[in-house]
Length: 94
Image 1: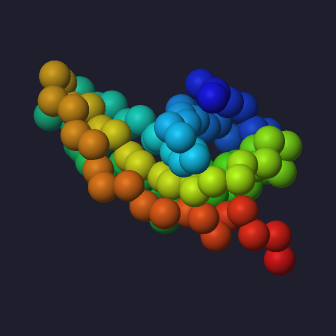
Image 2: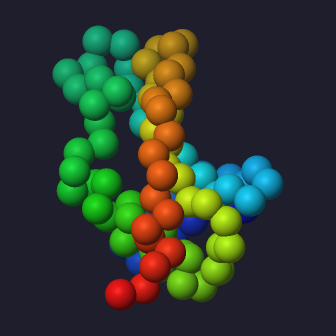
């Protein structure tokens, strides 16, 4: 759906769809031996920024199906897909 989508000051790395599901993938990469590993690189503040950016994208491109979030971390040649999280509540305007 989108790659490196700019939403104001924020960027959505990958927006993928498969059937009725829209998934935001946040990709983090670190060199082996880095002080902060890619597995722990998404802090709560960044998660909120990603949610705001995705809500802005959903305002422009409505999505009728499920919405989820997943982190992907790279360290050297090792790739790890973290468990997906449901973000369906972002579709609801309050």
